Image (cartoon, rainbow, N blue to C red; front, side, top):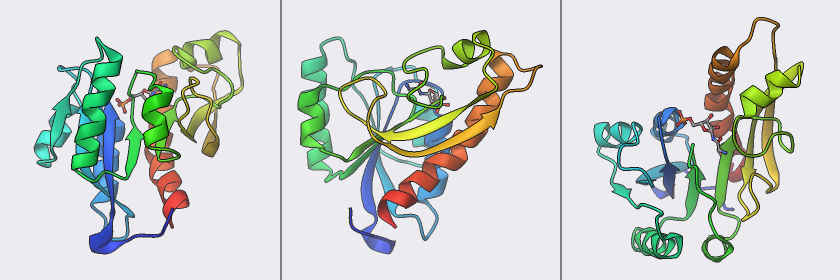
Length: 192
Ligand code: GAR
């Protein structure tokens, strides 16, 4: 995709389902003068997603679209995105698998962050699984999204050492710190 900085920042939507620490971090990143993206819309499939407060704080438009009927939900979202001329989508703790039909419309423009060294540990409970297998390393990955769970082309990955004293909670925290550095770097890699 084309380099774009300044008033012509790439209009971006962030999709969340929960806490939104990556959303908060991406909002901060987008507000930097040399960031290639602006965040123009936040979509949550959960009404009570804590992360929605960050959209409120920065007066970013937010929409809640529940996925009880996925086809309908995706249609609504496609309309929202088109009307707002959104060109790029970042999934940030969004816990739904988008359909091929949706992704075709935003071909190669949807990215995700995942808390493991993909292709290891696709799906849920990544930290628990890494610890259970006595892995020495874990990390996080930013990748393009396809309709196959956590399987698209990798953009960037960060590896961290698991220490003997780590538990699920400490490992999650350690990896989140790295996620917050990796996501902006991956976006810069795509656009700059
Ligand atoms: C993050 O660790 C993110 O990598 C993970 O959910 C967490 C969301 O945290 N995403 C996935 O597992 C997607 N497969 P956040 O709401 O604080 O950004």
